Image (cartoon, rainbow, N blue to C red; front, top):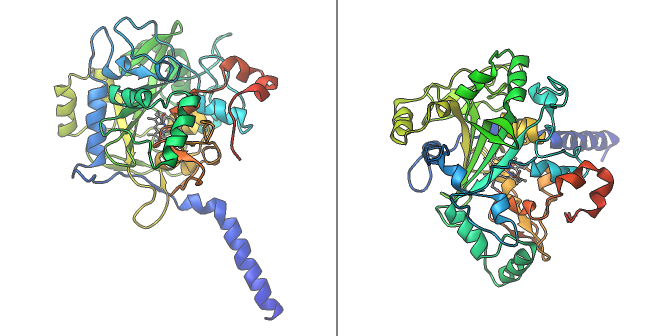
Length: 410
Ligand code: HEC
């Protein structure tokens, strides 16, 4: 071969190498699809949503009566009774894991700083002294999920180590079809007023309380900005995310797709503008009827389905993007271009000693995901990170991190 050919081959290889990280640029926004049952995943997502946020008495909605991770991932799991104590939210487990891994600053307290304030033009300075802007999360699982996890002892590291042995004989972690899980993101009302204000939306605290679902935890009034739902209606689950209509940049980067509940089925991302407003996601008559039948409170009508996701790649082979403008982009610091619910959750697994497998999680996987042979898949459930999550007190002091029990497999 001539020198010129070598140069051309070299340039081609270089172009491929340069192209690798940019591959995600070819990712397309998820838009759900028809399930084997013949129902579209967008419709199914709204059916779950309506059931989950329907009133459950004592001022609570259904999912607020489900088991939180703190009820499950302990030596003595218990389904919450009627007299469940005061609600506690937590700082982001995902952030704590990424922080222990050195790729993020450690969060502090039960209400922690977001990982990427800039991406969402989220406030960083306290509006008043002593009230630093923060957010908190909770994960809750329905009875079917709770029973499966507890009966199969998948809630402790020792139980997972035993499950690893069972899996060598062909057993698989496989949740029942009626499993449903929720992850909700909450922002203190004062922080939310400041965040919206920075992005051209003037609401006072009373207006926020009227238009958002709110709760009190840790003596603070929180408003819900985002809700994820995963349901086992398909072998790879159905991945749906809901956003409050006022979330700045709600449809940035991937657009919003809702073929069932939104009068405008497809909203394309605003060109150039960041963290703009995408309107009120007016609802279809079918969805209005559904919310009415379930007696869903008016504040919930302000939430929009961003998209549902049921596949790893688009029909053309491009990796699918699906991320919440708050939960992934701002809170966890994962750019929407590098966010795919199904891909990141497909990498949830554990190793022989029952410790979670973190390698793929920390690289923000896109497209099809394959676990190494020596890792047992946890059926897309990441809650196992809660088992050994770095306690917040340790995460606050970086010098303590060596003592964390999170063991990353490299
Ligand atoms: C980069 C990885 C990543 C991406 C992307 C991601 N998640 Fe997760 N998710 C996690 C981790 C880690 C947890 C557990 C820790 C926590 O609660 O934050 C979790 C928790 C959850 C839970 C609670 C159930 C469980 O698995 O324990 C739900 C539901 C959920 N995510 C849905 C979604 C949806 C819907 C999307 C996309 C819109 C999404 N996730 C995107 C990593 C990811």
